[in-house]
Every structure is written in structure tokens, then in C-alpha cells.
Image (cartoon, rainbow, N blue to C red):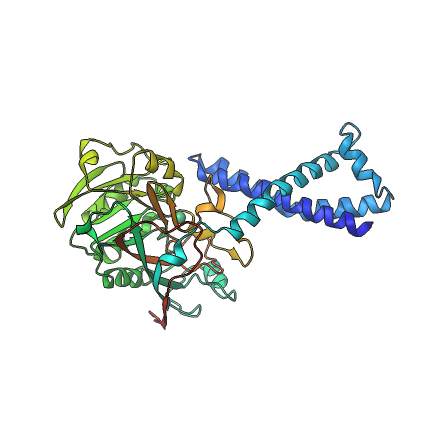
Amino acid sequence: MALSHFFIACFALLGHSKIWVVAFNRLLARNLPRKPVKICELGILILLALGPVVFLGWTAAALLASRFPMGLATSLLDVFSATPVEIYLAVCVAAAAWAAPVWIWRFAFDHNQDRQATRKRRHLVLAKPSDTPLATHLLTRLLTYIPGNQVLELEVNTKELRLARLPAKLHDFTIAHISDLHISGQFSSAFYERVVEEVNAMQADLVVVTGDILESKHCLDWIPHTLGRLHCENGVFFILGNHDLRIGDTQALRNRLENAGLIDLGGKSRVLNIRGTNLFLAGNERPWFEPLPVIDQHAQTADFRLLLSHTPDQIDWARKHDFDLMLAGHTHGGQIRLPWTGPIVAPSRYDARFASGLFHLPPTLLHVSRGVSGIQPLRLNCRPEISRLVLQSAAPPKTTEHAAGQVEELAASHGIS
Ligand SMILES: [Fe+2]
């Protein structure tokens, strides 16, 4: 009897975790003042930590009161006589019962096409934890010593994107997609210089940076010798993300980036004439910055529409405005990916659904980068990533197809100190 109630408590604990992780994800997906968000974050983390204590305590108390097996059932049926803990436990059981089929469905029918699209994957170890110049903060240094922490690594991916409406002239057009650099001083500028070298080595036709670029004022001077060294014939375009707000004066950041040769696409659009085709390019920084880019007659007559957005939550807007390809970041792949559940925490109203990867949501193909870094220097089973996207004109693959593409994997170590 005690064992069955222990399992009920464990099931309820799953529901408890689901409720508060969803609350956490939705909270961070919105444009809210930072201080109340931090307080709510702390409250949610405390509640998550208290869950095991409350549920195991409930099991022990019920066992001692010898209320098994009918006590729980009676309480669930008669909420007026149930204790607050029992009512909450019933809510958690219901949440787990709702979440479990979703988890199973996602596991069985993975709609993420990232594996099928990846043709080449190169692992770089940018530095060892003992490399002094890399992680400049003590806490960061300590976290880098955690076994399996991949925060000092980089995955350089080549992915083939099949786009049904891609003009034939843009076949094999390449885009270097980088996101979420989070330049804050936690890592030295040498870390970012190394990332930029890798992006330049891609020799992409277009380079895009999808937000969360820099969040400490004192790192503004790093821009010329980091992102300022990015080069691309057709331009290096950027938008900002929520962490860029932490600098205070975001216009100063935009100015520095533009002075370094990058092109601000936040809330703007433009048409690039490439290979005799018109490529409509737009930047959506919602919900953190206004305005939305104008979708005018240039978009209507363009041969291909490409959208940069910091958060994948803007996918509905992209679909509504008929974008062919949307590039996003923000969710960092979840940063911690467990073997069975995958990513759990992702600041999105879709939770971890678009944590990273490639998703075909007609008419739009969405690519979400895992990003380069993050303010929490911990990544497990979730390497930082930069991507070379090769656009290909073809019918999109079926979403439930599981056959992985032949991936050429290479590993290399490059200390930078
Ligand atoms: Fe980010």
C-alpha cells in the first residue's frame, strides 16, 4: 500500500514539475520588467525544489495515519474534506496525466528535422577549463569543470535545407547563422574571436546574427575585433534579443555594430538582389522591441522571403506573412538535454517544442540555433552551435521521417590560450 502511494506521489511530482516548468518557460517568453521576473523565477525555483519534500512528506504522513488505500480516493472525490496538499496533489496528478501522452507522442514522432538535414558536423574544443584567459569569472571557471559541461565547445554544422519555393538560381545559396553570443565578460574576447574565425571560414553568401549579442557595457569595445571581423559579400545582418536590453542603451549597441560594418535589420526590411533574384529580408525583434518590419509590395513581388527573429515564438507571424525561411535563437537548445526527455527548460510559449533544430510549418521552414553561449555557463548534451545553412530547391521531406542523413563527423581541439 505504501508503495502504491509512493508511486502516486512520484506521478504527482511529475505533474508538479510540469506545471512550474511551463510557468517558468512562459514567464521568460514575455517582455516583462526584469526585477519582478527575477522574483518570480526565484519563487518558481523554490516551489520546484519543495515539490519532492511535500509529496514524500504527504506519503509518509498518510502512511502514519493509516489512511490507505481509501483515504486518497475519498479525498479526491470529496474536495471539501480534502486537505490543501491533497487537492494540490490531485491537480498535479491531472497535470501529469495530461503531459505524459504529449511526452510519449513527441518521443515517438519527432518532428524536428535537424538530424535529417545535417550533412557535416565538426566538434571543436575551444579551450580547456584550466585555460586562464577563457573563463574570466570564478563561478564560470568552476562550472566549466563539471564533467560533461560542453560550454567551452563549439559544433560547426552544415545543414541542407530543402525549400519548395526556392528559386533555382538560389540553389546552394549559403547562410551562416549565429545566435546568442551573450558577450558579457564571462568568457574572454578570444573565445568570440575564435567563433568569428569559424564563421568566416564558412565563406557563406549571407551572414546573420539573431540576437542576444552583448549584455555588458564594458564589452562594447570588443565589437571591432570580434563581430566587426565578420565579412560577407552580401552583408552581415543582425537583430537584437532580450538580453541586449541589459546594456541599457541599446541604440549605443546598434551604433557600435553598424560602425563595425554590420547591418541593423531590427524592425526593418530590405530587398537584396542576389543571382538575379529578389530576396526579401526582414527582422522581427518582438516582443522586446518595436516596430514590426513592414511587409510591403517589395515582399509581394520577392522571389524568396527570409525572416530573422530572436524568438521562435514569432513563427505564427512568419507563417501569416508567408515567409519561406525563419531563423531564430533564444532557447539555447534547452542547455540541459536529458537522455529521455530532451530539453525541458526553454523560454518559449511553446515550451521546449522549438528548443533547437529544424521545423517545417508550412509555408515556413524554421531553424532555431542552439546559440554560441549563455549567461548560465552550463550545457549538458547541448553543444554551442554555429550553422552553415545550404538552401536547396526541393520538396520538403515528410515530417515523421526518421532516417538520419549521412553525417560526416569530425572532431578537433583548438586551444586559444
Ligand atoms: Fe540567449
